[in-house]
Image 1 (cartoon, one colour):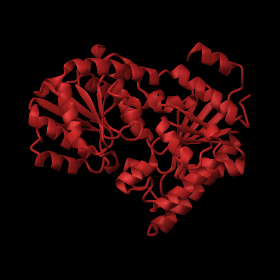
Image 2 (image 1 turned 90 degrees about the horizontal axis):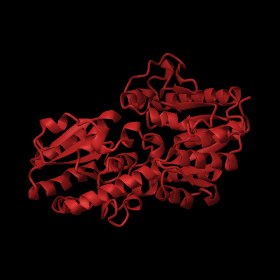
Image 3 (image 1 turned 90 degrees about the vertical axis):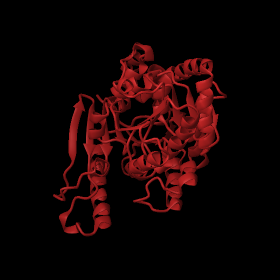
Image 4 (image 1 turned 180 degrees about the vertical axis):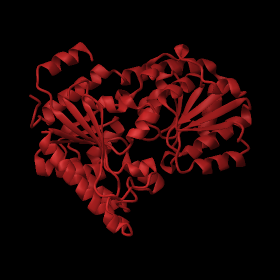
Length: 426
C-alpha cells in the first residue's frame, strides 16, 4: 500500500464495511482470477474488515439449493475479508412455491445481515446496484443508522431502451417498479459512486444528489497482469494454432443487452474485404449457441473462436496478441484492452465515447451500426500508422484510469466527508 495512503489511514481508527455484490460469486472469483475485485473493497487498507455478501449465489453458480434450512457459506478469504453467500430458497416445506420461498428466505437473510451489522459494528453498507442490493442497503441504514453507498455500473435507462429488459427481470418484472426503487434509493444514499461520468449522470437524473456523488473507475479492479506492457507478456497458444494475420477480440458476457451479435456481424464485413483475419470471443452467456449458429450462417465458423470464460492471466496474453478491440458495450474489459495498447472500435453508447474520445484511442461509430463497426476495422487494417498512434493513446488512458493511489484517496476523502463512520475499530 502506498505510503501516502498508509499515513492517512494510520491517523484514524478504521471503519468496517458490508459490501453487497451480485456480479460475482466466490467460485467465479477463483476460476477467473478476480482477486482484485475483492481486494479493492478494502480501499487501500482504509477498512478494518470487509464482509462481501451475495444473497443468492446458487443462481449464477447454476446449482440447486439443498432446501435444508437456513445455511450460509461463510469463508474467510484473508485477515481483512469475509465472503458470505446465501441461496435463493431455504425451506423444504415451500419447495413447490418458489416465489413465496424466495421472499421468506431473503427476509431471513436480511435478518442475518441486520444482526451482523449490529454485532460487528459495521459503519458503511455498499451496494453495487440500486435495485435488490439497494433495497437491502436502504433497510440496513434505516434500522441501524449506518451510512449507505450505492454503486452505479451501467446506464440502466439506455440498457432498457435498447433491449426492453429490466435490470432484475425475474424479481421486479416491470421497469416502472425499478424506476421507483432507484429514485428512492439514490435519494436516500449518503454517497452515489459511478464507474464513469455517463453512469453517474444517469443516477443524478434519477434521484441522486449531485453534491454527494463520486466517480470511481473500473481501474481499481484490474488484475496485475494487465499492467504489463504487451511486448513483455507471454504469447497465448491460440496464436500458434490459428492461421491468421490479424486478430480482433471481444471480451464480455454473451447477453442480449451487450449486443455481441453485432460483433459477429461486423467481423463478417471485415472478412469480405480482408480474408486473413480471425475473431476471438472471450466470455460466456445464454446466447452463446445462438452466436455460434450466426457465425455458421455467415460462413465464419472456422474464423470465430468462442473461448468461454477465461482467467485474467490468459486474457492478458490474448489481448497482447490482438490487433484491435471491438466493443458494442463493455465496462472493465474496455480498460483491460486499453492497457494492452489496443485501439478500440466502439459504439457511441454509455461511457465508450467518453473514453475513446475523438478518434484518440480508437474509433467511435453509431450505436448498433455493425456495418460501420466493420468498416472502421477495415480502415485500421489499411492504415497501420493509425493503429500505432491510437494504441499508444489507449494505453495512456488505461494507465490513467488505474492509478490506485489516486482512486483510493478520492474514495477515502468521500467516505470521511459523506459517510462519517458511526463506529471505528479500537
